[in-house]
Length: 156
Image (cartoon, rainbow, N blue to C red; front, side, top):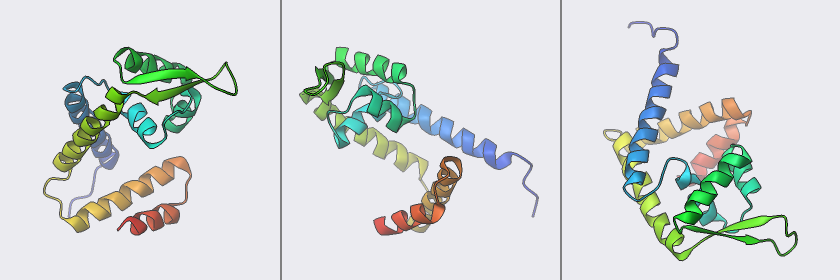
C-alpha cells in the first residue's frame, strides 16, 4: 500500500471543508442569505434574544463581524434589535416572523448539503466520520475527545 504523502490528510480536510462551505453558500444564496448569516440565524433559533457579544463568543468571531452581519439581517427583515431591560447599553437580537420562517430554508439547505457530502456513505461510515471529525475538533479546542465521543454515542 502506498504511503500517504506528508500533508495529504490536511489538504483533503481543507478541500472538503472549502467545497462544503461553497455548496452550502450557493444553496443559502437562493434564499437570500450570505455566508455566515445562517450561523447567527441558527444560534438565535436555539436561543432567541442573545446579545451581539454572546453571539460573537459562541461563533468564535469578532464582535464587529457579528454586528455587521446582524445589521444586514435586520435590513433584510430577518432580525430585530431591542434594548436590554437591565442595561440600556446592551441590545438583544431577536428573530422576526420572517426570520423564523427562514430557519426552515436554512435547515433544508444544511440537510441537502449534508446529503450530498455523505452520498455513498452507509450509516456506519457516517458515524465513524462524525467521531473522527469530533476528535479533530477536540484536538483544536483542547476538549477531551472521550467526552465528545460519549455525546455522539448518546445521539445514536
